[in-house]
Image (tube, rainbow, N blue to C red):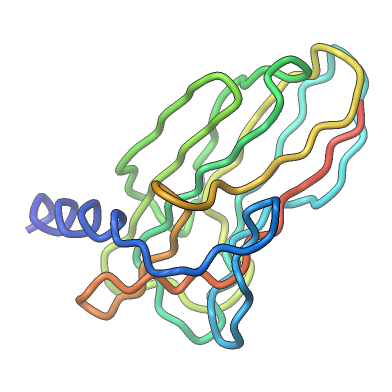
Length: 168
């Protein structure tokens, strides 16, 4: 049962159903859709300091059963250290990928689906390696970040995904 559910969730994560606008790849916000965000939205650290951002989901009244967060950052200024998913509202990992300047986290839950706001998805840990400003942004377009509704057809309910700013 779980294998077929995982296959279904992963296949539905490939569905592209959002309109992309703006130079930063921000999705057009539509009332009633889910928000995927980084917490805190702004942070200041020193060179050499280890810090983290939490990937959070505000699903409102929607019923989310999977999240795919693809986050870009400047690898010349920070390095990725690791993940922490203890206490995640989405306890099952489906995919974790690291590339220079990109972290992808895909997680799911079995029913009941996640509703409400401030659902913890995963903690991302980094280390500051040089001074400057870093913008963290969710990937848009092909292979975009998604939140999948528990509607048995794989509807992407992600409506808005603000990034975060880091000052080093």
